[in-house]
Image (cartoon, rainbow, N blue to C red; front, top):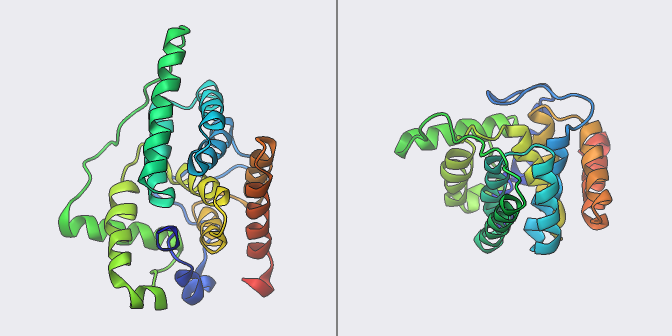
Length: 244
């Protein structure tokens, strides 16, 4: 499932030369040289949710809310997570977020609720068109290749649902969504190809290699050395022309 949902190494095979480090999505702001506190908080939340480690997820959620993530921000990360780690992990993580929020209320902490999407999500052919456009902007070029020739329906699912239903939701910017994706994929062994694709996409939406190195450091600081190593290896390959 994750192999298809990670946007596709197939895109990299045919269109790697079209990567654009300065491309921005409509809801993406230019990157600074360092990740903000809320951006950093997204990484362990996504990683521990994908790995199914509820104890560490609880701690990461508390730290994220303390850092200024709204309830909506955290919830949106965990909803998106299902596309990369499956519904069971996403549902378990959302249940954990409910527990954390309730426990914080009992301690007198009232976290900001955040916001919902600012526009209606299209349906039908309009959803497919929006998803295809979002996928192209994220990848830097139309996504195609042998995998999608072999199973074209999976790309339609990607375009209508992941890049349509989910990425059309503007209550979480694309840089945050990519940090969540990188954190989730890095936490799961065997998804190095998809992680490499999302390192490229992260740069396409305005995150810098320096920030992605910091993302690895954040994961390492939270005790996930394997996830940190995978991010560093993917980033090294991205930055080495001979292997790109």
